[in-house]
Length: 230
Image (cartoon, rainbow, N blue to C red; front, side, top):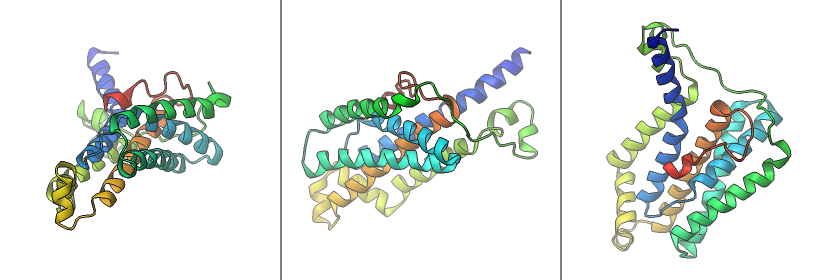
C-alpha cells in the first residue's frame, strides 16, 4: 500500500468519524441559539446509541434504528427542556445531570447486550463517475448515506438560522427573551421545540456511532466523549 493510498483511506475515515460530531454540534448550536445551554449531549448520544443498537437488532432495519435513536435523544432533551424552561432550573446543572442520567441509563439498558455485535448497518455508497476520481473520489464520494445526510443537515441548519424569519426570531428569543415576548413570539414554545430538535440530532449522532464506527455495544467506549466536544 502506497503512502498516497494510506492518506486517502485516512481522510475518508476521518470524514466518517467526524459525522456524529457534526450531528451533535448542530444540535448544540440550535439549542444554544434558543437560549438554553445543553451539556447533556453526551448522555443523549449514548441513549441514542443503545436505542439504535436494540431496535436495529430487533427489526433488522438500520433506518428504523437510526430514527429510533434520534427519538430517544429527543425524549431526553424534552426532560432537559422541562427542567430548564418550565421549572427554571439551572441549565448547567440540568445538562450535567442529564449526561450522568443518560450514561447510567444506557449502561443499565445495555448491560445484557455488552459486547454483542450489530446485525445490520449502512453500507458505503459509490456515486457513479465521481467516486472514481483519483484521490478525491474515494474520500468524498464513497461515504455512507448518513455522512451526506449530516452535510445536508448542516446546510439546512445554516440557512434556517441565518436566512429565515423563524431563525432570526430564534436569535431574539435566545438573546433577549423579554423583547421577543413583547414582539408576540412564543418564547417557551420556541425554546422547547429547538431544545428537543437539538436532542434529536444528538441522538442521530449516537446512532451513527453504533451503526458505522463501533458496530457493537460497549458502554465504556461507544461515544468516547464526542458529546463533550460538541
